Length: 212
Image 1 (cartoon, rainbow, N blue to C red):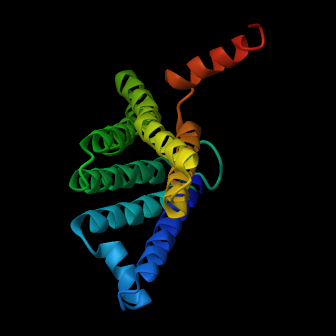
Image 2: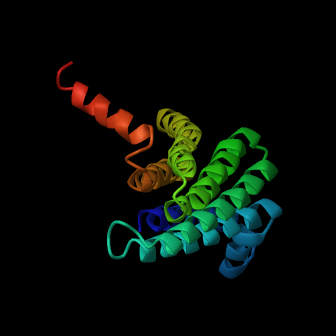
């Protein structure tokens, strides 16, 4: 549900800002035509829209997998991981076309590696492979780590727009992007393994904080 909350928020805000910008130019195009152009009007837009749809599908599968609480349905959970990995690849392609290879490497390649690794490692419980279980734990951590560059980019964009206050649409885009990244990261956190590295380390730091 968190994944799809972020997916919906990002898509709706992005489309709304794009339509508002097109209306202000008054180029005579219909609202439908403007919407279609934003969604599939270029190779990059098509890739990003495809990624959003696949991510949304994966979010629905995750919801079904966890509908009865922990532990999730293993087959559906692996399917959600695979779909998220495919979505990350499409996202990376879109970012490369847009000229942002570094963000594509983290939000696309690194995220896909984490999701596919989680899906592969998800079969380890049935097969009893400790090594593959540890790989799955690491890959779940990798998914969360892959959010860090995007969060930093979003924070920098949001800070710039807040300081300048020159372009409200750009401010809305930066704010929605930052919010979506944090929502997705919260979902990633919920999927972390307690036997991984990130969650135990965070718990230890939280316990030390009051003493400090």
